[in-house]
Image 1 (cartoon, rainbow over the protein chains, first blue to last red):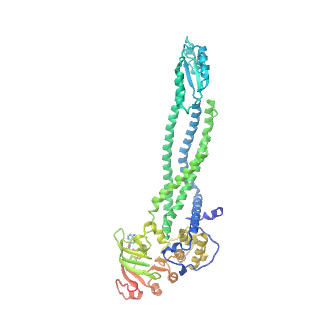
Image 2: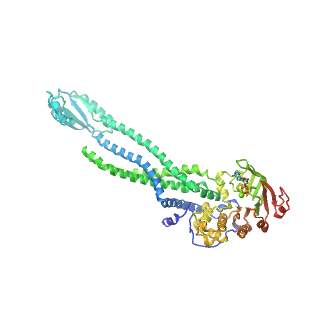
Image 3: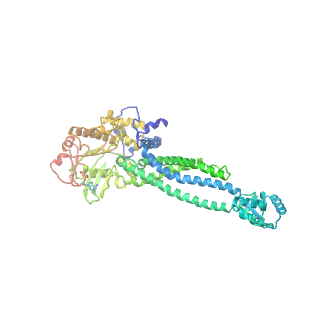
Length: 353
Length: 237
Ligand SMILES: Nc1ncnc2c1ncn2[C@@H]1O[C@H](COP(=O)(O)OP(=O)(O)O)[C@@H](O)[C@H]1O
Ligand SMILES: [Mg+2]
């Protein structure tokens, strides 16, 4: 096909210049080979017809690309609008995925805090701790004495002096439990929580996960929001492509009338416009890709700084192959479909008179 | 080939451009459609080319009742005819070769065959050397010949020409008309709208004369000269 390309670029509807070099003259109007109505396709076998048909498609496919690259500026303008529209949902979706990744990490580190009763002595507490360590559901137990809890609290809360004024340490001793089971089995976590709460030494058993759950709930709203935004922007892309194609059709009104008079079918006339829409969409997808990548690079550094504050080595995940395929696929589909709608609406209006 | 039965055409503004026209042009014939400007010549052509639909009556082309040809069937129907316009209707951003190749492209011919047929057609109208130029650089007569090459390249059985020589000087007009005569000689049915009476007389072909939408004469031009009046369909009726 490669040898076809340069020539194809100068044709329209697959109409090619300099198609054959062999000049053999035959008297074109030979009465003996003219027949009735079925004669339009006389002399073309079905196989040749199919071959020619595919060839025309390929030619038109590349021709329309050539047309677009002949007007790089206006092509870029349209494609850029599509690209910006596509980049927004793609970028937001990527951020959501990243946030989910972070949350997954946090939720698997879910811990249960057992606040022990004040009556519980340190010796008892340590005994409980070693008993709990033997339970299969529990991965690790950390004992935090009243004193170290107070120390920690006064260091971080800023209430240090106020606490010094107290006669008694008001804080309970705490057992920090890391469950073996993770977020994926919330029932089991709840059962474990129940079991631990029932122990006599335990005052309160608290799961440090509720805020994670809340964040997940917020994320669900975010996801829904991105979905709605995607829908709206998809419509915007359809409108942009539709309008561009509508103008293209109007510019070529006379041409369309002429080839209709010659017997062109609607699908023949439609073809270059559909491919043009496809190219716009694909280019828009590529531009969106670049925009998202640039945005990611811009926020990568601040994200890394934040991650460091949390002693995390988290790195932003870039565009994976699935997102890439989705972006280009959705882009070219929307381009094709937007063009299809426009052509369907406007081609019927153009009839010879 | 062309049969009109009691055909009337009223445009949406209420003007009746054709009134109860009945005529028959047998396959392989050549005839001239004459009449003053506004007589309805173009309207009759448009009915044959399915650009317009009749308000009343029946049009049968090549045995096919046009009322039965739906919108989707029009492209296929038109591929069996060649249409030539007074204003040529060429694509000016395409070369002569590409213009002439159009009907073959549309019908799905291969490129090799297209090259061969286009050159044969251009040779026939004497424009073989112009295949690579753009129509805008051609004279009116040459442009019309490109239009003719395009109209005949797919070997249609019916050729329609609406005032094909309207803008040409007498010599060029004669040349063009003789070209049509040649196509007719190899079996193509030809219908030409024209009011160039001298040329028509010279070619000795039957005429169909319209007057304000009515059929005024159908037959030899000499009979018409005697003013034999309305509804004379002695030859082909
Ligand atoms: N689309 C149209 N709408 C309304 N009237 C029309 C239309 N086309 C032609 N006419 C009228 O019909 C009559 C016949 O026109 P036409 O067939 O073009 O005549 P001719 O080709 O013989 O000059 C004229 O009076 C013309 O004004
Ligand atoms: Mg006219």
